[in-house]
Image 1 (cartoon, one colour):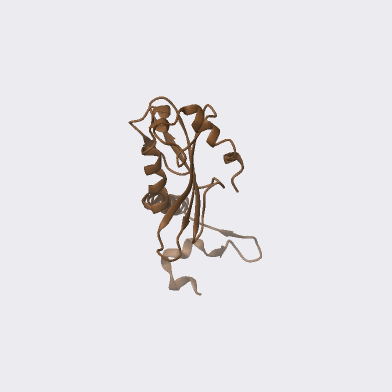
Image 2 (cartoon, rainbow, N blue to C red):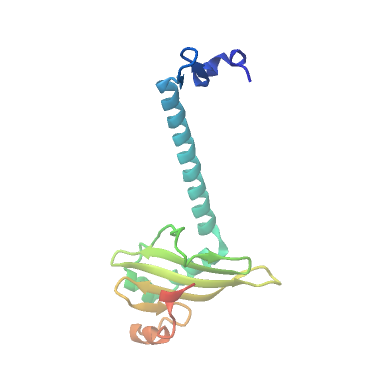
Length: 175
């Protein structure tokens, strides 16, 4: 590549100061700053777009939707949270509790109400024949440590009985 072929890039080529002496690279500081800013903005925009699209995909999935519906259908859990209003937050993408495979999904959904918040631990499987997701487990763990099994809780069940149903569920060690 010859220097005279690309006049805009001449500042990036090594140019000898004089014969037998060191060579230096002359580059415009403003060009380098512009390149750095452009690269940073482009990278940040790409990462932000990817994060948004991933969160959107998770929130629109059947396994996520089924879990939130199970929570909304449980009056004991909704009352414990102080909902409505129920706020379903974005998944923590780096949380190792969130695992989605072709036929199984295990996610930890942060939720809050007006009283308190917690995590909705869910486990779902996909029926191979119908290709529909089914909720296998849905447990709400509140910030105070109380757990409520959403699938084994009827509206007439008391909060103490709901806690008894969840004693064997170990949501702290989901891998």
